[in-house]
Image: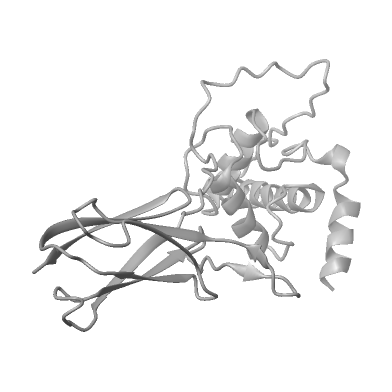
Length: 250
């Protein structure tokens, strides 16, 4: 039924007879025709934005509301079907206004119909200064790569009077997923993600510079055996990522 109605509309109002909307309009169109479209949408409460002469996001939304309200495909493209329906609405309103004029005054004046413009007679449109209104702002992806360090303390013994400190280091990629080293089908490393732990060069400390590769969970485990007390800055690096933590050895 809807398809038959659309065909009937197009048959009654072909492209060359649409006096009010003589051209197809779409996103990024500009000029007097867009102003006319915005005024039409505004007068019928389909559009609440400013009259700019630029067809961007607000005008696109207004066209879709108009199309949905009138049983048209909600494409946002103001083409032959949408223009024909708008022509019917305007002519219906003009006829209704004329009938009311006759009722109230007993006379009528012929409605003024805008003539079609040809390329040779169409006025040159000088648009105002470009506006950023309705421009699409690209969304930049969020880099979720990071190094996360979890610290735990091992047993204290005569060999380790200050205990052994265990660092479980997790590395994530830009999507926040574990950045794991992988192996191929024969067990050789296919992708290597390394993590380096750097400990301050304190007298007799061990593991001053230790490098490990991550497991399938994106983790590398380090053991640090401090031989001296005091505050120490431990630095972990992986690629361009760096994480520094401060510990206090008693």
